[in-house]
Image (cartoon, rainbow, N blue to C red; front, side):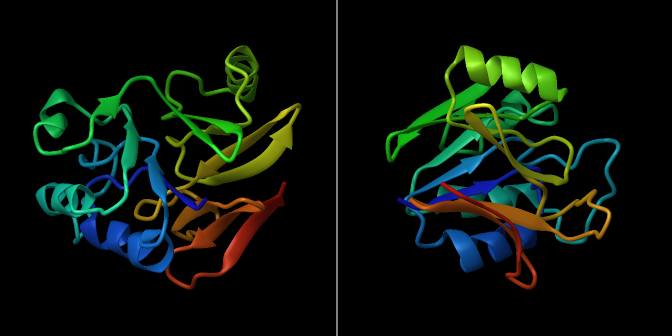
Length: 185
């Protein structure tokens, strides 16, 4: 199984398209951990900001897309997306692993994430919100933040997404396809 993981697209259709075309087009499932269409009042407006076209691209995916609600997602976004925006968590079972995604604005600290992951027995706990990547195992859970393909807050500015496969999780630079982080099961 191949699962594309993305977060914080903030209405940027071209940044979504890069991640999709390079990493997700042959995925079995895509998990979006929130802040899908709206750029947010604290974020700059990017030139490819077009939430209506991004919604069309997401709606046109051949594979299922699971979306959890971010702090910038609203009820009006659901009117243009065919897949439900779930709040506050998305659950998936793949390859015997319990995968849970949340945006991260409700459980921001590592301690809160660890407590939540333990309570729901998550094998992989995905979050977004902070726009930088995290990939590490703590306790029985792998914690993944794919970063953002559009509004990166990484020190190096790289725009990112992630892929979960049967054997590993990789975080990629969406522009160069370079692997920036890897965890092997």
